[in-house]
Structure formats: C-alpha cells, structure tokens
Image (cartoon, rainbow, N blue to C red; front, side):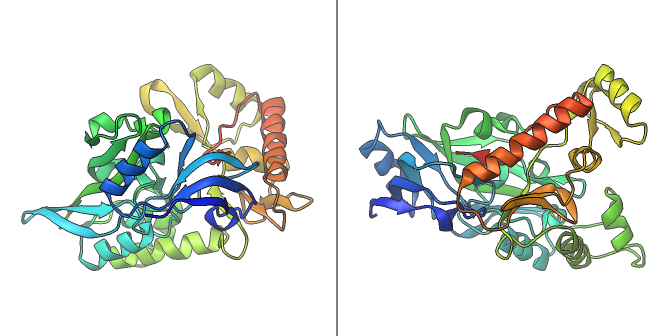
Length: 332
C-alpha cells in the first residue's frame, strides 16, 4: 500500500472544496489498515468514505485513511431472512440495488443516498420513514488506538437520530457491515411523499418502491456531481415540551412529530424556509431552490464561504425561533 504525500482533497469531498492532506492512504484490507495505524501512531487521522457528508475549510495536517475494502457475501440464510456482509467501500446505492434485485427487503427506502456502506452506520442514515439501524445485525471495525478488529452488535452501536457510537467517539474505522434483511415484503405507509408517489399502485413491489424513492429524491434534491452539495445539511431539531410550545406560539403551523422519550421533532427545512432562506444565495453559496435543507456550492473552492453561510442560517434560526440547528455535515 502506497502512502501519498500532499494530496489535493477537492475530488474527495462532494462540496468540491480545496484542501491538501499531508498524508493519504487507501488500505485494501484489514491487515493493511492495521499496519498503517501502527506506522503513524502520532498523526492526526481522518477516515474518509465517499466524502458526501463533509467538506474542508483548511489543509489537513495529518493522515487521511480511505478504506477500499469491497465485496458482498451471504453469511447466513433461512426461509425468512438473509444476513449479508458488505465491505465498507461498497457504494451504498449499488448495495441497495443488489438487495432489491434479490428481493431482500429492509433498505429500499434508503435508495439513492450518496454514501458508502461503511459510512451508513456512522450517521445512522435515514429517509422516508426508515433508518439503517433497523436492519444492521453488527458492524466490524478496527480500534484506531489498539489496532484490534472488533464486532459491534446493534445495541453496542448505540444508534440514535443521525448518531452512533462511531460518530460520538470517532476512534473506530468500519471495515464491513452485516445486514439482516427479510425475504418477504409488504409495503408500509410511513412517509407522505412516498405514499403519494405510490398511491396508484396496489401492493407495490420492492422494485417499485425503490423506483418511487429515486423519483422523489431526484425531483427534490440536486445531483452533487452537477451542483456540489452534501445532502441534508442540518438535523431536524428535537424539542422539549416547552420548546415545542414556544415554537407553536411563533409558528402555529409548524410541523410537530413525536420523538423518543417524550420529546418532539420539527422540520429544519420548514424553519429555514420561514426564515427566508429557501433558495437564497450569497456569493457562490446558497440553499437549493427546491429544498431549504440543502446548501449548494455554485462555484467556490473555499470551504470558509460554505461555513460562513451555514453559521448565518444557524444564527437566523436561533434569533427568530430560539432553536439551535445542529449540522449533519462535518466541517474540517
């Protein structure tokens, strides 16, 4: 495995911001990964997947590790379900397509999300009423400090809303993920946009659901290749009873959903829209005209411009509605 020096990272993040990494490597297997960790114990390290959920504001003074472990393998199978292991570097949507084509149910609602398999558990990616945590059997990862390969059960992953132990601690490198998927499928209505897309189809198949998800996402979300972005930029805020009451006093029509532990969720896109930021552009950065939750790059190579626009939106929402928007996207 080659260790590269002074690598430009513009092609490795979907916002296409420029930054230089002091060291860069692409381990092809667990042995190479453990070896490189041992060779550079004192370097600051960053694990990179497809780069669709981060951007750079400055050079990275350390080691970028971009795992390239691939492969999809059936580990266990019954008449009712199948357990499949997928390498961390597998393209997420390619993996979804593979599962749907084999009539394995559970991740069809997560179609067309730009990600790698290894990144999916970190954010606990979710869409259209589904979250990846619901189908993960366990995650295999290497401890950055000890170099030991570990298996994390679903419970040990500490999944939450766009959260996991891998995001909170950031000292594990995921090498593969094992999914438990069902062999039978009945469509469950979970998300209004998807329900509308399928309303003229009785008992939609897995393929029909996947196709519908792709159509909805294509209409609402920009292609990051044509218009650089990192998808949903902010998390939907989780509110206490008091925060909910205060928000509804200011915005009686604000969407409110029940969350866990007596909390409530509202829509970040709705708040950004009400604050006048849907489709707003400032220089080379703006929010997407069709979806307020997406920050897009119209031509800058400087991540500071994106960060400044992000902060401007956060300050506006806090000032007007008393709610702090937390980013889904990581800023380096």
